[in-house]
Each structure stands twice: as C-alpha cells, then as structure tokens.
Image (cartoon, rainbow, N blue to C red; front, side, top):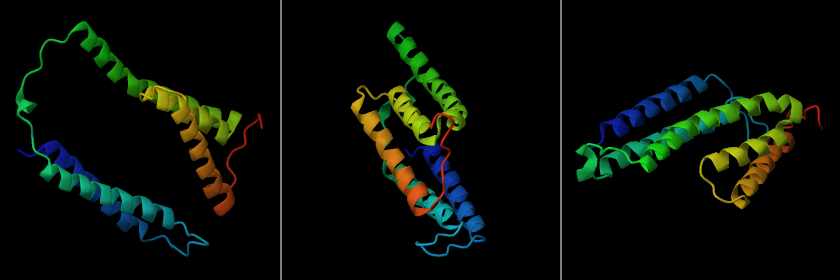
Amino acid sequence: MISRKEITSSLVFILFGVGYLVYNTQYPLDTLNNPGPGLFPLIVGGLLTLLAIYQWIEAFQKPRGKDDHKKEKLPSIKGIFQKWKDETGPLLLMVVFAIYLFLIPWAGFFASNFLFVVISSRLLGSRDWKRPVSLAIGINLFCYLLFEIWLKLSLPRGVLV
C-alpha cells in the first residue's frame, strides 16, 4: 500500500518548485563570476524540484508496514514526557529563531549565527558540543566566503563588533 501523504506532499513540492522556476525566468542569470539575481533562486528551485521528485519516487518504492493500521496503546509516563518533548521542540526552535533575528543587529550576523546553529543543533538532539560547534564554524565560514568574498556583500556587523 502506498502512502498518500507522501505522494501528496511530493506533488505539492514538485508543483511549488516548478512554479518557482517558472517565476524565476524573469530574472537574468549572468555568469558565475558575476551572478545575476536569478542564479541563486534557480539553484534553490532546481534542488527543491529534484528532491521532491526523489521523494515522490521513494514513496512508490517504500513498502508499507503491517503496523500502519494498528491503534495506539495507552501511553506510559515515559511516552507522555517524550510526546511533550517532541511537541515543545519545534516551539522552542521558533523562540530561538525569533531571538536570533533580534540578536543580529545587536551582536552581528556571525556571532548570532554561531549561537543559533549551536543552540538549535542541541535542541534537535545533538548530544555533544563538538559537532554543533564545528557545524556553526563551517556555516559561518561558508557564509563569509559566499557573501563577503564572492558576492562582496557586507553582512551586519552589530553594535558589539
């Protein structure tokens, strides 16, 4: 049996990606050395469409388990706390994101981005500090190279810097 939710969501994302790509045709691409305003949206729209097509294909290939129609048992205390944790995680992440947005003008892009990546990684389940810190350093380095060096755009420095 094929999961209708996965097929439907895949088709919605395929349509959204194709629409995004069609809308993007009104912007010039220029060259990689001097990218126009249509280059980055073209890459994002193409990736979105390709990933949605991949998800759609996977939905047809994935066998549906026998346990999909079973009713849930009454949850245990541990299950209740796990469900509460699962439901509050996205809310906490939204709060952290809002704080991140307000922190950018004050602390600057790179400092607030570093904190946001580390804290959100921990909220998403990273158990140690090494991976979130390395991820934050890598993302900041990528943003610096992309925006400051390649595109020659300055990111907010903040009051502290």
